[in-house]
Amino acid sequence: MEQDQAQKIAEFIKETIAKMGIAADVDIEDGLSGKIFNIASPDSNLLIGQHGANLYALQILAHAVGLKHFGVAERFSIDVDDYRRKREWFLRETAKKALEQVKRTHKPVMLEPMPAYERRVVHAYLSEDFSIETESIGNEPNRRIVIRPKARGEI
Image 1 (cartoon, rainbow, N blue to C red):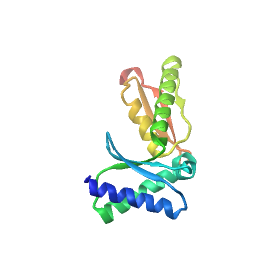
Image 2: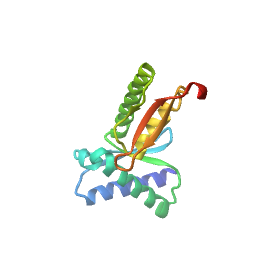
Image 3: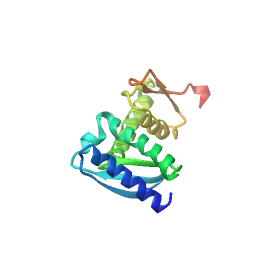
Image 4: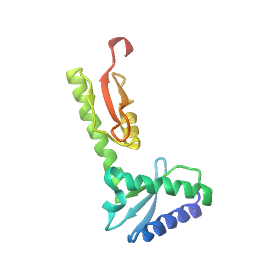
């Protein structure tokens, strides 16, 4: 993504938030999988929403506008006061504890319901261990991950 395109997306994000009556600054960072637009605001909880729902909606809107109006097809993400970074760390730690429990008890472990983005983080993290398998079960918004040991012949 060109710097000019990134600046336009940052301005769109800032203007959208301003129309909501929220003061915020938007910083652009280079992440592992594209640009990260990190929003700093005293109203961060409102911007994040319950389980990150508002943040996720803002990202979908910014992706659509970025593609249609600024020609940005590359992936980018939006974060609010490092919420996503902290949440991903928490999800990996939760997955690690569940993995240890599965290995210790040889019984499946079911995680809390989470949105698709968070489930992808957990599936990706656990995909490195070939002794277990993961599966998403249930229907939104109660879709969750089950971690279970693989049968001996599957390893």
